[in-house]
Length: 252
Image (cartoon, rainbow, N blue to C red; front, side):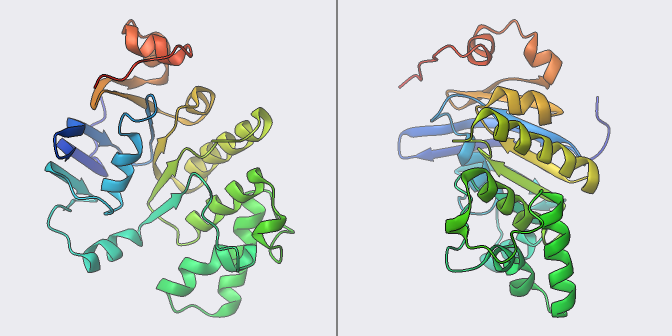
């Protein structure tokens, strides 16, 4: 049992669009320095959790506390301040195609901080080396493979030294070798920087490599949360079906 105060505390979070309930009063804690994976079939609200935690979607009801701050009443200025503590690795990398790799990685630093250019360049080079792309600084996104783009996206997410990193399907569309490369990088990032991470994915190999705990979402509810071993050995038929790759039908 973790006796630390959660970095992220979600209580009775409900998201509904009219009569369609996407998240149905879920509770979730993410503790300092851990990687929590949220798994589940497509359309069960995994990415919706990320939108709430980054201030892109307001809860229908319930509460979200991040770093001790109740965010329900936040305005955009307060969210912008909190986002300085967050890094996001997007599913499709979301690199600016008109900027070089180095400029992409430096984007947040230049936007939010007044730093000497020499310090920015040192930080960019350090991060590109960390993700295994030390010679890519002057390349354009169009010159990169899918796996390289994901790694640049991770470098950019880490540039502002965030306390929290969100990963949205970081291995989607990658071959098995690159999937494992990205998964190991996520684990390395946690160990090196002690960041608190939320990994949204349906890739169980990535979950088993990166995660400390796993929460499974199904039909808007968390059907089980536990360690990787507890999820691997789950007796819940929905969890067992999902991790073994069987198709799960979503209720209307």
